[in-house]
Image (cartoon, rainbow, N blue to C red):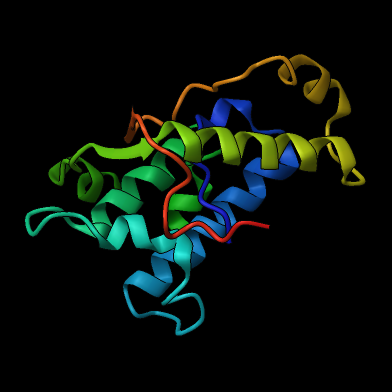
Length: 151
């Protein structure tokens, strides 16, 4: 599972589809609809919000931004209704510069090396050192975050 911290506009079609599917799996794990992934490190940042933040609604907002770049079909697949998202304003979450850079290099490597990925997009993106973050994240100083599993 990979819940990218950078803006989904940088994802190729394969990456966006995978990101949506993995975020949906994360949402189902957070809501107890499936046992797999419940303790995955990628969900840690959603679980570790302060007492007033809701991991579920923050992840719903994360997914809705991904979906804006795909179709509204995915809302129906997991039962997210627009009024659910609008009624719950997620708190802004943070991501460290080191985490964002690590994920960016990880993604660029996937684009470059995996079969079926958009090599033209890789050529366009490879010069970007620091991508724009996903809209639910604000960037703060810091290294790779503790919950990350470094490969």
